[in-house]
Image (cartoon, rainbow, N blue to C red; front, side):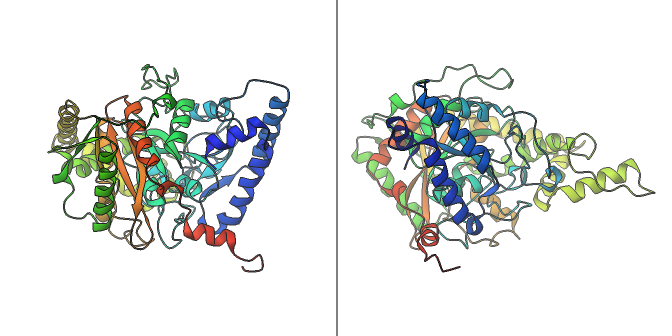
Length: 495
């Protein structure tokens, strides 16, 4: 069931928060050994929370919009009293003393947090293979990646372990795994959702957002977590509109920009076929398709991997074994420098080290102007491209990814090929614009395909409206992952 359906049933008394929580915990217990979506499952804490919600309902107290709905949080969002590791050895054993704002707001809305999900270490990756705790597997095919870096959250929702999860998106880390797992992933406008309590990767790019089965649930979750937060200096004071009221199904006259020249080499034919079919569905509903140009979009990947790594180098400098993080065992002849070096070498994985070194290099004397400054200038050109386009269209449509889910291990030895998987998603982060991915079909091998819409700044209303209209005419989001369902339906005697 969707989150909206679950909370309505609980409110009517058809079921209880405890029963819903127990059902999802049972599914997690069955599927988790194969999928590995979670780093931590807080079963007792979740059941205690569900019991308290049932007691509130019986006492006639006001109920929140997510009353009794189980949710999971990506393990780079602080939760008081619950381990938060960012899937890194350097934070093994860290238990925050406070909640991220999004965790506090979810609980205020009545949600039940059931655990923390796996991710690429410090959200650096596109496959959830960079986790120090091992990879997460795609519920559609356990030999394939769920995408990254929010792969654990996406796999948990796709497999029905939870109806809602939060991810963070720095270059596509919500939308890309949503596409590969056949669910909805929304990256809000930069500043729409507080980043307080989110472990920073690249502070000018990071944004928290929902992973769900339906656009309606994404709107419901964004309404719960969005809005200004005084704890976050980058949090916008822009008023959050009534997102659910925007889901009218009406797109007549809405103009959808299609950057045909950007959809060239390297895009799987099945992806293009599904994308074109999706556009035809929206055109049949009354939308107008408009050919547009984004001349600097092709530079998105190199620009992103200069700016993001530079910010990562700065943000991760604090994990030195003194201020934060793992400290190596000190030997007799160790100096402070060797202690720093060994602590960071033992604590960080290969991909994080790669990005720290690249970021440090582009910020160094003699290279700053040639690389980092130039990347920021191209970032401005990309933003101007979108401003020009949005003078004539309401949203921009692209595929979410150039290929369906690839096999685990297929791209780990070639970072460039891994990075190119984000070619359609990084632009929204570089420009701060909102973007959403919705399921739009399957490959010949029954792997999900995603359709992405990018909207104007703080215009999530239009973004959600067009995505919801598309879901009303399609049923891809109702399909169940084949591998996960096979595990659920196997005989009890079968290992």
